[in-house]
Length: 335
Ligand SMILES: NC(=O)c1ccc[n+]([C@@H]2O[C@H](COP(=O)([O-])OP(=O)(O)OC[C@H]3O[C@@H](n4cnc5c(N)ncnc54)[C@H](OP(=O)(O)O)[C@@H]3O)[C@@H](O)[C@H]2O)c1
Image (cartoon, rainbow, N blue to C red; front, side):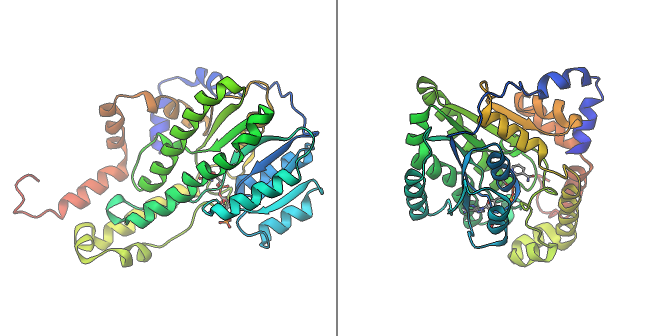
């Protein structure tokens, strides 16, 4: 990914970058009397945002997967009594109903101002290595989890003419190796958020989408797995097609991309705060490095032929093709 951005930035588009990345910073809303619900506060972006909004005086309903866990407990220790932990697994309707009841019973005078749909999981695998269950699990948390949360809390946000904020990803539009299930879930999430924005415009509710790039070092999102974990999941036919050498290469490639990227969550938290508190929140907040900004800003607008061709610039993609084509069956004339 990084080689791609360096390639494009090389074309002297740097002067445009500040224009594309700037957040208009007229923050108007203070927390006083307003509540915000955030999902996925055990760690990562949700955890940091909860603390930040608490410091700004909001009543924070912090949805946690494990309310008794270390993340939730450290949130309690470091926050004011205005922050309330809710048990909220976004895949469970019962949790949503319980959470809604608790929020309604504890609403401050100005009501529920914003919902930040942040809870999420990630994984990586080629589509041929994946099962339908892998896709279902991803979609159930990242997409249906956000839809469940929205349906439950939208009436309250509607009443306050507030904000709906969805944490998506660059993988909602940047399709690449290994991210099939995650991309499906985030692209679906953005479709939902876009439709909601159009519907809510008549009621004064604003909808924003946060698109972080690589913050894997700054949060707990990356669930490490080894080449052996992947290998053991493959049936004999897939083992023959891909081979152990390629699985090792794919694992090394993924691990090395995880080592780069942002080391702290600040840019994402700043964007989330802007989406919640600014008079003019942006529709989308793209949070990538300065080097990557031009590439990721134009990628969604490239013709498919050109967008696909970009991958041929990657040594990994070239290497993959050579390795997998090298295993071709001489009987297959099309190869
Ligand atoms: N970090 C990145 O590079 C990056 C890039 C693009 C987008 N994002 C998105 O940012 C959001 C936040 O992720 P993060 O990076 O902050 O990772 P994180 O530290 O793992 O935070 C995700 C949070 O969601 C929770 N969660 C998982 N399954 C849940 C469920 N079923 N119900 C409720 N909560 C659940 C996790 O709980 P546990 O800790 O108990 O698992 C965790 O607290 C996600 O939507 C992710 O897709 C992250």
